Length: 105
Image (cartoon, rainbow, N blue to C red):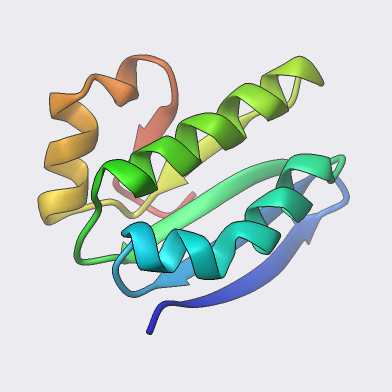
């Protein structure tokens, strides 16, 4: 089962650490968390360090969150992505729209 841990980095930035697959089942479970992130006033870092698998549902949720945040001029960054999730994000050219950084910053 996918787990989430939120960490307030400062007044303007929040990190959401995801552990487990980010697939259709996980997105259903995480929908409320993503809605809260979209409504917050902070910039968001999605920590994918412990996400071994990402599918189109996960990509869709991330892009949807990104679009909702852009309306309020907020930023979304993906950190720690590696392996299959990073390859898929690059293959779909998500990295041309959303900042993707392999290191935790």
